[in-house]
Amino acid sequence: MNTDQLLDEILGHLRQVKDSKPDLERILQFMRENTKIEEKEDITGNIPESYKQLIPRIAEDIDCGLIAFINRDNIEYETIPTDAYEEDFAGCREFWLDQIEKVDCWQNRIEIRPLYSSQSFRMMESFIESLTNYPHEQEHLIHILNNKKPFAHFKHYIHASPLREDWFSFKHAYIEKEVAILLDNELNVYECHDDSDDNE
Image (cartoon, rainbow, N blue to C red; front, side, top):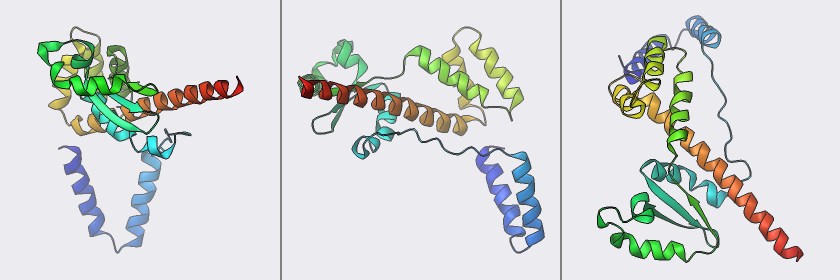
């Protein structure tokens, strides 16, 4: 039974007792004692609203292997495949030449690249650490990470497991947080440079 089916069954039970205050109170007490609800962390800090709105889009784009570029002067946004920007993979650079020339002309730009392998590996480790309610799956995934071809075997296992949707949600939130941290750092550095220029 996957998570959607479990949720449907839970909601079905709740609908059956929705008019019974004692039953609802018992259910609520059980949930408070046996589940842990974490407050969603504010990952955007002091990032301006115009940049905050880009975070989900950037996270999705870099997860697809694209490099994201933001023009600081007007918040214009462009993406270019890593293979096209860094090397002429299968002759695809010519197709993206207009975008490449455009972003290369942006003097004040932020460049956000897909996660490095080491970052992706840490993301998988963090997901596994969160699986305290799934000890069997957790143990199996730890075994996968400690053996050959961890990325391929992790992907294969997750896509055929009941954890598939949990993984996608976790991954997107994780990448959004990484993007927010990078944006916050880049914007702070940019502001410091502006202050230095003003003092000269």
